[in-house]
Image (cartoon, rainbow, N blue to C red):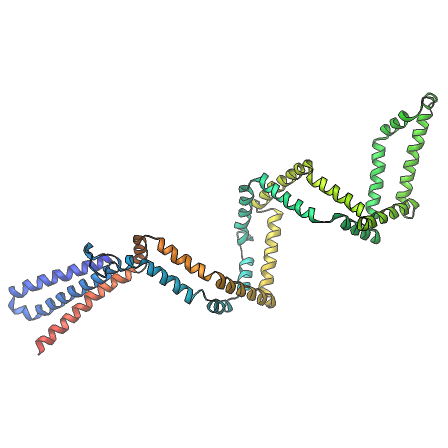
Length: 406
């Protein structure tokens, strides 16, 4: 557009020169050529004037330091402050933000976004979210992250009084009878363990018998009797829900629950055991192994579009989106929260935002500011030059006609 406007100005100069010569060479055509000459002369004046005005906004015309030219580079800081104040006054005021937010249904828009799918039911959000999760897990130092998670869990567990919690849990289990399946499992485990280690138990009994019992062979009979008695007791306790041994075990568990809740000595022992466990290096090594397996598994599942993790997340997002779309009360609550949040952010950080705009523009060099503004409005400014050329020519014809008429 700059070249077009300049070529039009050059054309008018050529027409002016040609018409001036033609009027001397062809006197008969002088009246008609006079109008053309007046048009071209006035068009040159209008085009040059508008070229000067447009150029003076951004730089010195012809490089000459004419006063009140290169306005934008010289007034860069004032422009930055004005832009920031305009943004603050017209966009970042609580009333404007609140009025704008009232016309927006943020919850419904979020629900629509979450329910829209692409690429075979793969949520638009999941496409980038799953990859982002995998990249975050890969970029972070696994050992440092694992130790931070462990430290956080350990610090939280250290604050928890474990003994009363265990006592209440144990009381509830006994009151509802939910400890019985666990007790049955322990009895079965004890029987199987004893069966697997029967020879070791016999050897212990024989080693503790005196030489006379070993010489007479009674040690084997004693060990068999002991094992048979233990097997029989375990079987009877397992099959008889009303066995006295169960009552004794229940009574012992109830007593233990009370001690855990009320006995300071028992509570101190539990806390000491908990602290020893948390400080044990073996626990740290075990946790690091567990954490690394979890991390690798999460990365693989996040990047697998067919994984159960992706299906669960996609299903959860769709459910959230459907709820946001179909529940007007939920929409009203979320929209109110969004509006209050936006207004609060505007009130709290509006000045900082406008200051950021102003300081950013001020840090730009004058050439950058000039280029950015000229690239935004320069095309329209060149139209001013073109229009100025044409309007100047029309004014020239009009004045020429008036002069010859009177």
